[in-house]
Length: 265
Picture 1 (cartoon, rainbow, N blue to C red):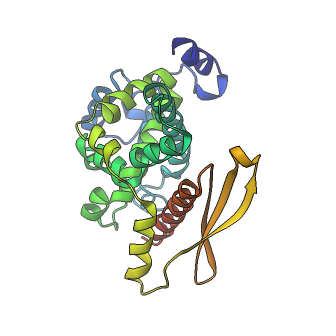
Picture 2: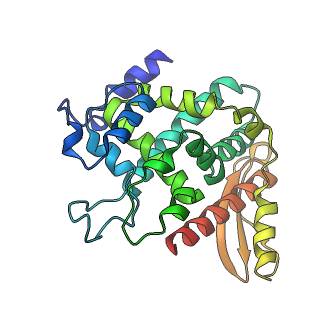
């Protein structure tokens, strides 16, 4: 594993430089600076990254904070990818008997918004959000999507500031060693059932799954499945088993629905 991390940390794109930013270069309270140092394990080099990770989109363009022009959405994009890599690496090494479809489902259970929000609540992340004056502070600090986004953004900030090894250490301490990790992995997480529940709540027809494509030899086919509702394509998924492809299509559909719901908040 050390060689793997050494190769990744040798890439120049993940570093932000060796310049040290003092806490007073940000608007972070000293309490938050101390909290972040304890959370990460070492002092931050670029505290502006961590400030951005904690910045909810309600702050941007708020007259009270004219100097903040970026929320944590870009860092969330990066953190999502970094977290996906680190969890995939862990599952690949520790679940050697699991096929690809099962690994994908297990990863999905770990990195979905509900699980990430739970990890974020354990470390008290919501208390340190930077929010706009007109925002509903209580609801945002308890919001599943806001907590999950900030948690991924924080991982993105750690990765940029400290590198992949420190990011992996954070994931181990606050996800893999979390008290609920084993129960999350063991939970039957059925995206198809969730999607049915969602459509029923809106009095819509049940989702329909259709095989869009089949590739590969007969003994090693790969199926691409699409899921539709009222003729609208909600998501697609590819796997060696149709059932796994359907679950992945339903997962994409639920993630899209969740993102659309979050953007309306």
